[in-house]
Length: 235
Image (tube, rainbow, N blue to C red; front, side, top):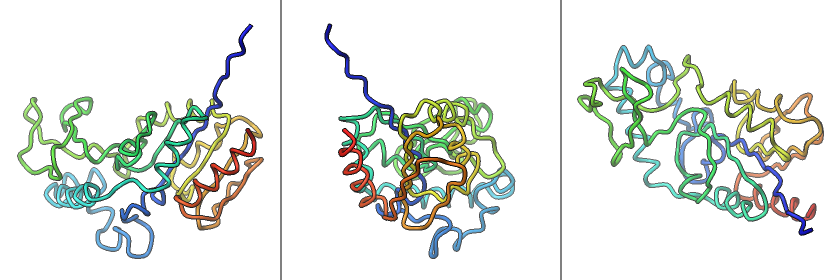
């Protein structure tokens, strides 16, 4: 009987550090976006109610920046790993660099900046043509469109699916996230005991209570290359 080669499931949780090498500013680092904007003025439901013009302008600026960016070596390395693993990406990022690199299975926890949704019916989601979403851009129900992102204080609709994916991992990788933002950081609690966990980040990222952790103290691009080398030795 011919043996069937079943690929191991490689689940990757990515954060802002994944996209930083593509030139996208992070929120919390020195020089990041929070230094220019107060989070409560641009990324909360209350901010939207108070000043939707400012909120739209903030996300238009981010969208323009994204359109000029390209996937980096970290993104491309994860695509390369699809030749040997069943790769599932759970990302906290709202950009589309994973998809543009060629990754086929990407779950966005915090929404997608190149999409909008109806303020009357959140299930109505639309692609944004170009960089701008402006006052007066309406859905077919006649309501103003808002960025299709999860703001602070809003629930994370995809977290249940993310928990299920994490629980099926044979290998779990964390790239470019501090593991301080919940509920995403809590996904490590759903992985199977003792599976290999790799953390890629230049900073020291603690993972208390997690067994079998390999820390790769490198940025995303070099770190994914190192990960690929380590995984190839296990083949």
